[in-house]
Image 1 (cartoon, rainbow, N blue to C red):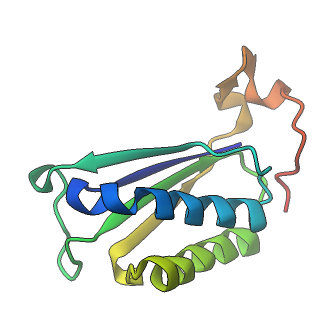
Image 2: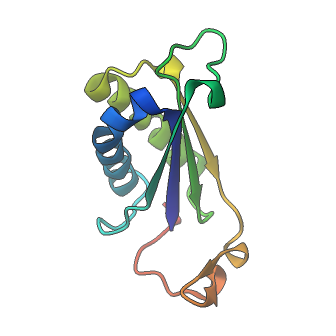
Length: 129
């Protein structure tokens, strides 16, 4: 299980939304091992005054939060981050300095999905990759 929240300036995020969603999904499937059908991306386009740009970043600054079941190795998570940075630069011309990604892994028992605690779900895919 993984959910993606993407934050950025509305004037930048809206036109990049489809490409960014495709990029995130490919990396999640190919690196994290998510099934092709699992695509939970939420976009939060914001007015510039509500989304300040940190020093050293441009107006294209984008933040991605990935909330997922724990279990993937540190090497897998690092490979996922590296893939996002490389693909964002190559495919969207988004410089790595303008992309910030955080991976959050709440314990499965802290999730509630389809009427069950997450640690009681039978998954059709592995998270220990």
